[in-house]
Image 1: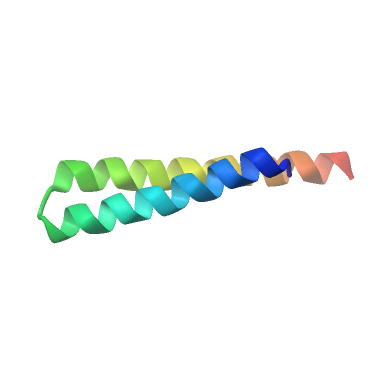
Image 2: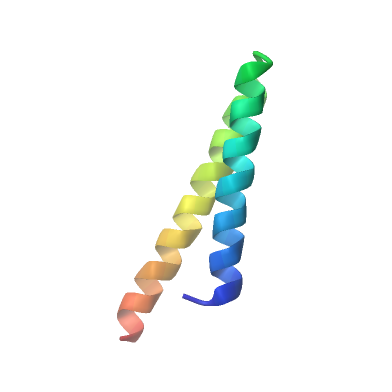
Length: 57
């Protein structure tokens, strides 16, 4: 996995989780959904890179 993409994926996961938890604490469900989407996008980006790596080897 390229280092840049790996960092982007992890950053999106952490940012999404932070936004989601803060939004839940403030009872902002729309913002919580956006945080969850950001977290999911980070997970999918990481999975995509892992799949690409498996074909390279």
